[in-house]
Image (cartoon, rainbow, N blue to C red; front, side):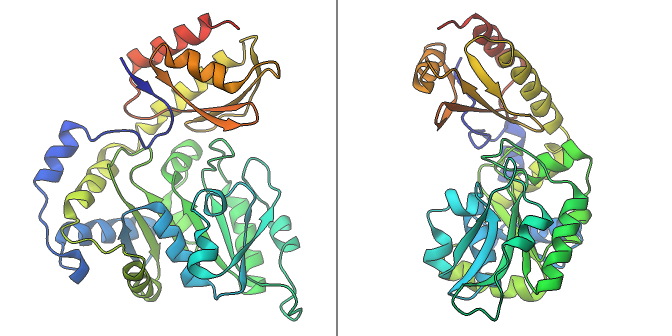
Amino acid sequence: MEINLVSDTVTKPSNEMLQYMFRAKVGDDVYKQDPTVNELEESVAHLFGMEAALFFPSGTMANQTAIKLHTQPGEQVICDKYSHIYHYEGGGASFNSGVSCSLVDGTRGLITAEQVRAHINDPEFYHAPKSALVSLENTTNKGGGACYEILEMKRIKQVCLEHDLKYHLDGARLWNAMVAKKQHPKQFGELFDTISVCLSKGLGAPVGSLLLGSKNDMKRALRIRKILGGGMRQAGYLAAAGMYALQNNILRLEEDHQRAQELGALLATLPWIEKVEPIETNIIIFSVRKTLEEKWVIDKLKQKNIHISSMGQGKLRIVTHLDYKQVMHSYVMEHLAKMVF
């Protein structure tokens, strides 16, 4: 039994999802003639109460398109120091849009309205980059799956309005946040200029993200997606997987969150663990004792066919997901409890 807890992107389509994909009606999406892609875009836009959506092959491309939409070369994006757009998108903000990032020292990847305000450059001071965009991440990846409160996001929105800044949400794991916090998609659609949502993290689709926004912005985004090479032809087979995921795999995210809580509670009792970060969703980040190397823990778990990932500096990460079944969970809990160093 191989148990992969490196990420929630390692899931494979279920037989039911595959059958749904096989039955998809398709066309050429580059010409906007794929009925299943069109249905997915319309459905998700309606879900969030936004005007339009555009299907992308990856969340990175969706985020990079949003940055391009909202900025000009030489401008600056305000984001947390742990942000995915800064750490894990290959330097795309500078490469694609010619912008820099003003990094906020947030808490577990979460930033406040006061911090955003403090990072806005005076638009008359031409020696500094012009602040143009605020980007949040929900849930936070390097922050261990932490979630924003609606009230704080509203406060940040007010700062954006006061300073004429655009407002983007990297919602790769937004479904997890909404389930954990009992929030509704329209609460997010009311706040942000653009939102990216992922279908292959947590929801189990093999490929795909969407960018949501105004009709005008999505028309411009279509051109940017083309330039970035993101146009796909009979993409309805992939969009169908997303439709199935949205209809069947959102509420069950609670199971992933519960198993993450149980793993975290166990880890907190083990003598070789230094610290377990607070757990809100499906990501567990924990630190090992200073006398240990994280590689030793990873290798020992590999011997039991359990795979987790290192974040460096003594930190390790476990991510629960829909392919992590109860029998696997019991096995992992048993072997973690037995591990000694």
